Each structure stands twice: as structure tokens, then as C-alpha cells.
Length: 313
Image 1 (spheres, rainbow, N blue to C red):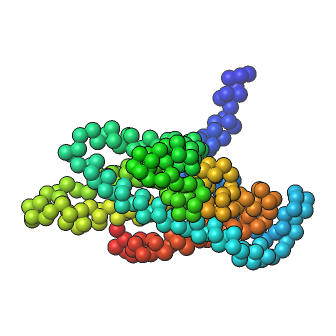
Image 2 (cartoon, rainbow, N blue to C red):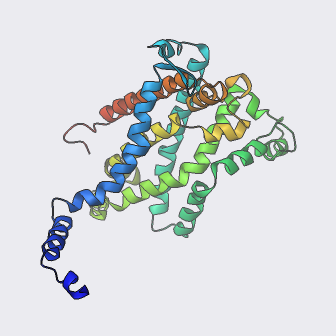
């Protein structure tokens, strides 16, 4: 009886149809991308749509939700939001100013055949990216403490410089945040630019040498144009990373608040309003505004860099 079931003529065509269906060229690609589609719908599209809807609501509790139109967006015009926007924009500007030229220079240096131990330096510079941001933030919080015995102030004392209250001043606090960001992401950007340098044909440098070009001329006319796609990519993710900064500031000041809001970023402001003040509707409005700001800034820089032109790269 078992053999009859296995060799049943009714089952063979069905199994063949099912096998043919899952092996067809039209179906297989969708099977492979299905995990991404599901994760995109569940973890990105649905939360984004929910956030947009919540930004037009006043949410006092799970059962107390009221539609209030554009009131949350009108409430954005306050000094706390504009201060958070200013802090975030200045932080993004300074991190971009440091984390593009400096990694390019170090990548060119490490890519040179005359450098001894370049693999060691690549690994050493990449290690900070593997460090927990909370651990790194706590270390920098202690290192840049206000006491004379803290690491940085002790070094300054040896040089005859008075101790600095780093995390209490507007400019010094920004300096600490930028230094922390540079320490964490310098090695990552170096890896990006090193990969870009590997794609530049060595024949171009040899031809330039034959024509009498010096190192600066080679860098300007060969290296920089060859790295343009990588520069655009690093600039794009740096804009996103700068405007989405949260954990570094949170760790430095032990919470979303900082003295005089000198470390209040937009994401910190979202956290404070959405969770500390239990105003998820207003927090959602800030989040949507942040999304629009990042999109506009990135579109402008991509347009400026010639990304949308046919000659692009």
C-alpha cells in the first residue's frame, strides 16, 4: 500500500509542477529577495508610515489618541528645536571637515609601498570602530573630565596650560564630540579610501611620472578624480551619521540633557520629547522633519558633486 501511495500517478505530476514552479526563472529571484522585502516592510516601511501618522496626532496613551493636524509641526518653532538643529548641523559640518581630508591623506600614505607595517596600522586604526560606543563615550567622558587629574587636563598641565572644563562649554563640548567621532570612524573611512585607491590603475601614475608630474600633481589630477565615487559615498553616509548622532552625546553627558543643551542633538531631542515627556506625536514630527532635512542635504550635495550628471564619476 505504501508503494502505491509513493508511485501514485496523481502525486507525480503535482510534485513535478511544484518543483518546476520553485525552479522557474521567474519565481527564484523573488524567493531570494523575499527576506529583504519582508524585513523592509516590517522594520522600515511600516514604522515610517506609522511615524508619519503619529506626527499628526496627540498621543496621551494607548487608548487616548487624537488627530490634531499640523499642530505638532507648528510647535517645532521653538528655541529648543532650533538649538538642537544648530548643534547637529555644526557637529555634522565639523565631522565631515575632518573625516574626509584626513582619511584620504592617511590612506594615500598607507597605500605607499615604502611604508613599513602598513597592514598593522590599518588594523590598529580600524579597532576603534569595533568598540562599543557607550564604552568609548564613558572613556572620553572620564578622559575629558574637569578635574586637574583627568587624562587630558593632566597632559595640559605638563605643558603649562590651565585645566579646561571640557563638557561644560559650548565650543569645548563640540570639540570633544568631534574628537570622539574622529577616533571611532577614522579607520573605517581609511578602509573606504584604500579600496578606492586600489581601483586606480598604476599605469596612470607611471605615465604621469614619465611626463614629469610631481607627487602633488599626481594627487590632484589622478588620485582625487579616481576617488570621487568613494568621496561621494563617504560624504553621503557622513551626513546621515552626523544628523543621526545620539549614543555619543548620550554617553558623554549620561542622558539626553546636557548643560545649556550644548550637546542636545536632534535625535536626543526626539528621545527627550517622545519618551521623557511622553509626547510621541511631537517626537514623531521631529523625526519626520529630521528625515526631510537629511534627504534635502544629501540631494543638494549629490547635485553639487555631479552625481546626477551622465558623466557622474
